[in-house]
Amino acid sequence: METETIIYFHPAPEQMYKNNAAKKHWWQDAVLRERTLTAEETGGFFVPVDCPIPPFYYKKKPWPPELLSETMERTLHLADGMADAFLHPEIMTSVSEKYLGRWEMRKETVERMGAGLLAAYAADCLREKGRVAVLLGSPDDTDRQMEMTLGLLTPYLPRINDLLFYYEEVAGTDIWEETGDYLEEYGYEYGLVPAMRPYQAGEKGLCCGKERCGGVILDLAAAPRYPRMARERAVYVDLTSDQEKERTCIRKNGEILYVSPLKYLDTIVKTGYDREL
Image 1: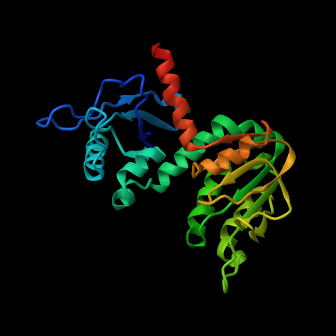
Image 2: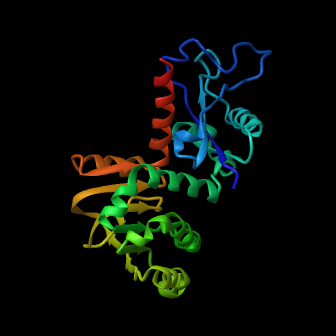
């Protein structure tokens, strides 16, 4: 399979673009300057492209959402191969809700980034602890989430002996029937019997139960679910890059390593800048 290109659109570091702008005169077109890194930066899972977005016009005017989307679109079309985009939260806000649907990542892109995160930060923990808790998101997307989880965990399943899924209950729906094909595959191929636990209602919304999660937590839910953690080092892989989840992990005094696509790409880009200094 061809290595996919992922363009990371993020705010330009002020020190690098202090006197720069995407458009300086009324007759000019707005232009973004991207920088292609190597696939080795991500272990070969994808080719990252660093695309900082500078101020639009002498720092006096914000980007018009339509123009920003069009300018990013041009950059995306010029990229090699099957390219997709990841937007920093600040850029996502600048694009406005009208254009958000256009910039939703493909399922395959999310999987590539998830695989890269697991390989870079969680592989040793998966093999040593053998424990995984999966926080499922929207019930409307259960089938895709189960398929993605199986694909992400397959390289590590021979060493996993404890697999727990949290899910949102829906009236009139049998979760065992909904997920039966995937659960059977874990059993037939690896002798692994996953556990299923419904989220519970809490003061902040849905939350995990009393079970203590350890090893690796793979979070696919859009909103925080607050899993209780075992007294051991753990890796929290947040595929939604939610800042509240990151703050919660930071409060654990270093017991939990928090990783996400946003943090992953920020690290890759910063490492590239450091090499140039």
